[in-house]
Image 1 (cartoon, chains in turn yellow, red):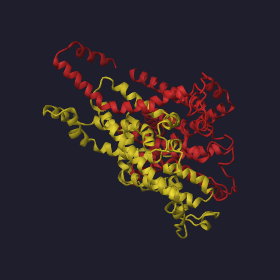
Image 2 (cartoon, chains in turn red, green):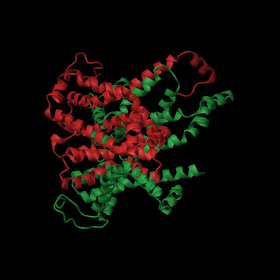
Image 3 (tube, chains in turn blue, brown):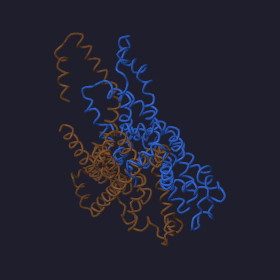
Image 4 (cartoon, chains in turn orange, cyan):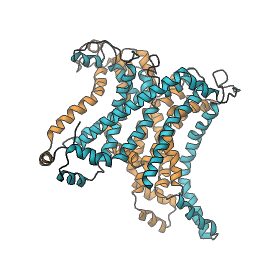
Length: 287
Length: 313
């Protein structure tokens, strides 16, 4: 699409801001993101604006009835939004509790077996979710963890923990070693040094991991689908999928429900955009 | 790993208190990583080992909770591998994976090169593209279902502009469904590849370009002579991760077509799901799950071996 320009053009572009590239960028990114606009605009359309050809690009009047029907007056949907919130927060907390000390040890403590100990986390990322979901369903159905928040939280943590450790590890690598040594001289135990000195320094990393695990868990589908059999325990992704069958071609309510499911993720993304992009690039490229 | 032996020996030889204290503090280091490792052992490695066990028995809806399923050895594997559905599933999965990956990566490169040229708002535009990447797959899939729908879908309305009038329901036609889900998946994956390639481009030293420009290298020469060779490790990582993640795809396809129509989009992970949770033949499902695991595993091992050889060379 775009190649580095010829030298002489480049020199001029360094003097003046290249607004022509901005214009191209806005058009291209606009086309790329158009499907998301289409979802939101469809959600506000009444059936007479929806079923037209050529389509109504901008809703002529905003119709909120899709939202009332698919979300705010729909108990299944409200309940599953709550389920997803519980599951996502629970998973983020559990993943942080496990990943924070693990990434510290693997990044900072120069263990003999660091390479070997990292392996399970790398392997885990390769694993298809269905390969975990199938035995988990069999095992969990014997111990009452099917249709149970804890069951889904444990499964989701399997999916996000490797990622959390691998994203968090580089944050520890950047801490000056002298700080811990100073703490050791002052008689602090390793645990005290970790809690009081190291943790505050990796707070940006912890935020990144919390945001990430929340986003990944909120969108998780397979574990929700396989580890719940009762509607009132379903996460919101599974409910949205069942809406597709239920509403058929009533695209207005379906897009309203989709927009609501996407909304928390978009808000989290806009607030924590820097942490998300920075953390991912660090984790994916370095390991 | 070789260094570990050198460190270990003094700890064994010295019985003095100092040595023992060092041993204890070494142990305390492992306590930090132990909870996470134990968690994975219990909730990931044990279930996988259990899957292997499951795959050797004829577990089905009748004996699932009662127990007493018959041992059948590798029959479940033989049955799955020789079923007519297996080869078509494997083919669908490979076509889906390779086509998605090729276009995701190439278009990702194009975006990364574009954003690598500094211009006003480039950082902002690059960042908002990632919204697509964080979107829950089920949301994207339901949205594309709507766009691909027959009479009022956005896709057909766009074709109208080009003078092609059709009411084709792209996901219902077995001949177009696979291409349709591939296009959706390309859209989903572009930001990931763009992000990795862009991050890699930041590591290419600027002076190299300056020197090449002064030597009269054209833009094309600079791209293929400097950028691409320097980016090889990043490209390798992006393609490996992309392959593994695409090969195991489930949610996008499940929500858009559930593997249909007529098996046209029936990727392996959906075949595993259907065997296990639709027909409730868990033994067969477990065998199929293990087969699904094999190809990404081979690809990853080959990648690691190649990388290790390159690093030591």
